Structure formats: C-alpha cells, structure tokens
Length: 316
Image (spheres, rainbow, N blue to C red):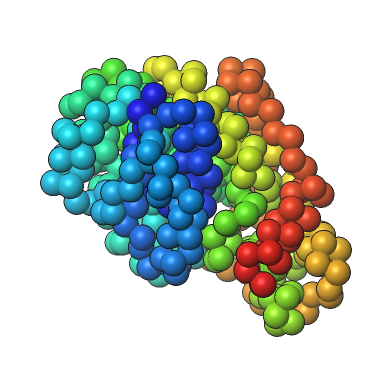
C-alpha cells in the first residue's frame, strides 16, 4: 500500500512510518518540523528512514494548499494517516487561534483533497480530551462529547465532525482514533512522563499540578501502533474508536514508578490545578477490541521501565 502520513516525524508518526516501511509499504512522510519542541528531535526520529527506498520525506505544512495539491497529484496514495496537529491542552488556552487554524483548517485541506483524489482510507488522530470532564467512566465512544474544556479538545472534536461531513458528502471512508495519553520512546518532551523523567535525572523539582490524585489512562506506543494498523485494515464507512490501555493510574503512583525505574528520588513542587486539565481519563476499549481486534499488551508497570531505559540511553 501507499501511505501519506502527516506529522510523520513526530512521536507517534515516526513509529508508524517505521512499522509501515517494515511491512513493505511505501510511505510519504509530511512534516513541517514545527518549533513547538526542538525540530532536531523530530529529525532524529526519522534519521534511519531517510535512506530507505520506500520512504520519502516532504517538508511542509498542512496549511500549504498548493504543496498539498501537488503532493496528491504527483504521488498517488491509497491511505492517509493524519497525525499532524498542534498538540497540548495548556498551550491551546494561550493561543487558541493557532490551534483552530492548524488543526481545523489543516484537516479540512486534507479531507478536501482526499475526497477529490478518491483516497480509499482516511485515518484521523483524535484525542481523549474530547470527553472533557465526564462523570461516567470509563469513557465510551457513544458518550456525548459536546463539552470540551480546552481549545485543543474543541479542535479535535471539530475535526471528527468535519470528517463525518466528508464521509457523508463524498463516501470517504474515515476512522477517527481517540488516543489516550500515549507514551514510550520518543515521547514529546512536554508530556508528563518525559518531563518528569528529565526532572528526576537532573535532580530538579517535578511540577505537580493538583494533589497528585488525578488519574490517566496511559497507553504504550507499540499498543497504539498496533491499534492504528488494525484501524487501517478495517477502515470503512465512518467509525470512532478509543485506543487506550483501559486502566488508570494516579499521578502520584506514576511518579513512584519512575522513581523505581530510575533508582532515584523525585523532588516535588506542588502547584495548583491547571485550567483545561481533567481529573481522569479512562478508555472503554470494548468497541476497538471487538471490531478491530485491538489488544493492548504493555501495562504501565512494564512500559515505564522501557521508557526510562530509552531515556538513559538516548537522552541522559
């Protein structure tokens, strides 16, 4: 198969590109190496792929209509996996217009061209943040998601709605994947596990927002890639799936696991709760298990030591 992977040099994207190339697929990676975090990290993510004959890197933005149109016209692809986005809940509160522009307009550009060029499968990266402050747990795809509490979450919900519109109008097959706090080697440096690990090794204080009792459904990168592959295989019609571990862990216990894996003691800086943060994320993955055959295999107790080993090897 021939793939276009947007955001292909990022954390999830680079792992997916590697897996697709290993499978014998042809991959066009589109990435603009945005400065949200050090672009050198993203270039390093794909450095081993650059010499592979089935991998092509195109540097550019999903907001560049001419570049995208030329890409679709000159590089026939079967499947689009759209991972590119402006990420992060807290930064979206500081700069909502940028999140609206990149996430929503960029997604419309890709949906429009995918419909025009008869793309057979469109996989859209969504987020657990669309659930907002749900009282019912675990979160199910059938739950109402009309109350996002950050511009980032709202932009992801808008992308799901637009994807349904393009499916309805043009019969574009779309699968939306709601990722639940993905972690593992190459995780973005602004995310909690990476940030906390860095603080521990540098003997700096971990910024702990709230009382440490917030809970997250952390999902190891290999399980997410497994889920994306299954979604690609089964993509038809319009579907939404949760991809999580379907287990939760308190923030304080996460820090304890990092201490154990690193053999060091964390220093804590207690801070008030942040706007846009939710008390819990918890995925009901019944639909993904049943319809996709998704089966996460790496519990947090195994995933954290794997991440810390990578960090010590690559970053420390």
